[in-house]
Amino acid sequence: MKSKGPLKVLNLKAIILGTALAILALLLVIRSSYNSSSSSDDASATNSEDTVAPTVRKAECAHQSCNKIPASLAQAIVHYTTSNVTPQQTLDEISVSARVLEQKSPCNFLVFGLGYDSLMWSALNYGGRTVFLDEDEAWIKQISRRFPMLESYRVTYDTKVTQAKELMEHGLGASACKEVKDPRRSACRLALKGLPGEVYETKWDLIMVDAPTGFHDEAPGRMSAIYTAGVMARNREGGGETDVFVHDVDRNVEDQFSKAFLCEGYLRKQQGRIRHFTIPSHRADGDGDGSERPFCPAQYSH
Image (tube, rainbow, N blue to C red; front, side, top):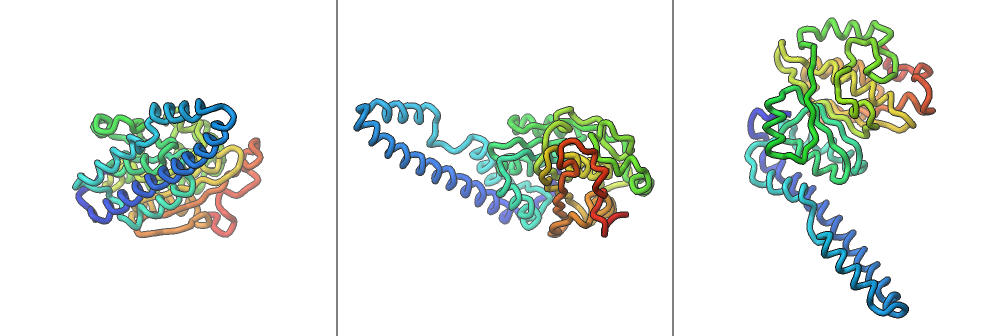
């Protein structure tokens, strides 16, 4: 999530501006429809109740600043238009998640990672809840000072990239790692148990794994983040599906763990270094433990 340098600056600005303008256009259409409806209602009100109701409506509209774009969207436009630092995801990679957000927002969006693209994801999910998790406390403070409207939490990981092989063997061999339950109650070593309580209790529509750091041996790696994202998706109460995205799948950990625990049978698209999985709830009845359904679709089970 933290950029190592400018990547396709003009292209990224184009998608941000385009998305922002699309949202603005939508708001204008909604406002126009509202005004048309209000005009019709006003005409009826004039015939029956003089002109009191229309006057009240216009006063309320002015008070609510209904002619302005949301402050968060305005800030995103200004930031990405003037910034020379861009996210590590390319335009094509961002577009994969953006298309799903376009369909589902406003929704609940959980992002493992906090970076230069965070304001963009929050703006694209305008009206929804977007939560960011990161392991670097100093980085969280830096971003929070600049963008205080972003909701972010620190996460502590107790793994290292050098443990990936051992954790893969445990994940594939331990029966506890195939159970569908709240990760806090799991005996699987891959399950993250120290996240904020609301992370476990929220029904997430989208989850993106773009952290923690995983590009050197002593880094925490994304083994647990990928596994936990998959379990939370399967443990979703009331049925439905969760869209899970994993970035940097050109690396061994992201490649192998996403295939094993998000499942190739749930893979919907790969674009560049990002994969999109759609994982159905294994608790469709709201009460089951998911045991009646294989962890991965049968043809892809390990």
